[in-house]
Length: 470
Image (cartoon, rainbow, N blue to C red; front, side, top):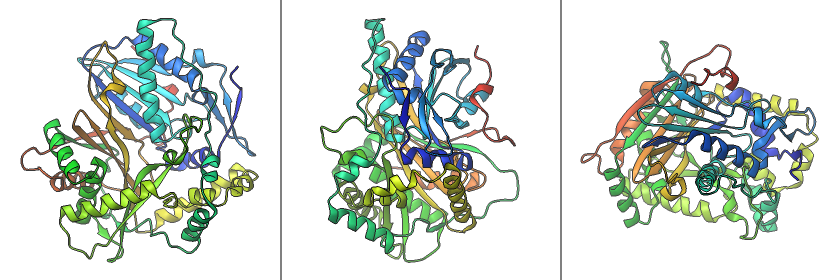
């Protein structure tokens, strides 16, 4: 029997506490199909996936003391999947991809099928319940259930009750020496500064809110893939190297001797093989790269530095870019102390922290890595997939997060643009420079597109207020 309540790990609590101020705490996946999806079967598949991963069928209860997850009793009446007549140019699509999720009221996973010349499937999930890597595994799970239902309409997936959604087990994998190293890095400021870039001043005119994305054709992607393999570098390293070199042309550095940027790193890799499934959870952190801008290097030298650092990040358990995550791992008892802190106090402290960062001139950027999507993991069988890419939420604080996705060699690099952080013209220039910095630009340049989304005085549009489905 599925439990009615689940404990809320501190990572979930902190994410919820920052949700109201930051806004874009969610991930979105867009899948362009070659034909028509069986909408009733997919609706059933998504509903079964919510049962198979029980935490997704919960609501976050923001109790003042020790918030928790509570299993919803109204799942069958929730409007978590809609069918809309339209395309990716329609206002409904712009609403969907730009609207955050209230984890205390709304479905944690929401889907929309755009019926048009080509069906487009959009799925998004709240960051409060799970991070990007967890969401990336949830999508293939839903697709697999969709396939199973065609063979057996009575199919019911196994419920994933044996989960470990906390970092407690990860802390147990660390030796005392490793914990001391993590703590020393934080306490004695051995970790590099996270905000080292100065973005161009915001314009006084009308400001764009929305998304820009750079699309590289599959032939260019194949060449970049071969280029990376020949240098023992992943596509993530190649894109990071190009983005750093582009940022040097578009932004300026606060200090001439250090430049830092980040990428998402999944700490699940450090769990033993027999560890229980983490399911939808927040167990990813930031990996920090440090480069010396005084070294005038070519692209291959930059790539080599990024490649070596990424390799170290993925292997070194003490390389934790997020200070709070580092504290939790180095001093596991800190979690129990914070459990006695009222939610309002946590929100207040985080709000002061984000305002303090926003008041500084320094900014930061990084790569939220959708990565290379295996085509077999999103094989619907009765309808083909032409394109898949990930979006991130539009975050109103001093960070830009670039999302990189590769599918069947085609590459999509999307950039959420907040008018409080960066101008659209600067964001476009950054993507143009990334395209130029990536090898083989002359033979197969990319294409930049834009999507403007509504700016609402009252904040994000609730899911319940979206247009009625056709």
